[in-house]
Image (cartoon, rainbow, N blue to C red):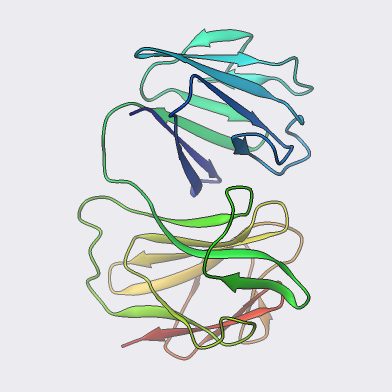
Length: 223
């Protein structure tokens, strides 16, 4: 089944299976693939599936739709094509391959971004990315310290864990052999590590470190 893998700066944000004849992409929440970024038009593009073929059509968007670096109006997609919408990259795949597991889901709350146990498709779902060898070599997890989900632990079993809300605040925790690092991906509000701001350069994590992202505190646990 064809799928679209959405990423920004190399960090996977979401994965969407194409199951309908017509799949819309844009900034407005009623789209099938929602990208909440001002560079993306409200109704930016549409994917039309006919049998095994998928055509991508730009809907007169303000900033255009690009496939493999070239602006398009309508184009038949091939597996592996890279679609560019604003700063986002969307990889089109048709072959079955190890996917991305959902881990933490956030939505705006009174105290910032509060983890919840389920969400509608329009709400942000962060993802884990990795290959078939991405099994947990070391035991590590993120423990939520504040909000309604305080006390919940999320194992870090894949290569990359992204948390946050696109356009607001996104951070990534990456496994590097026996160590883990955290860095800022997107948004004005940068994460902090033990009270110090974290930029785009990866910062090493150690057991007991406290990460705060848009009002939600999480503790890194590494045994």
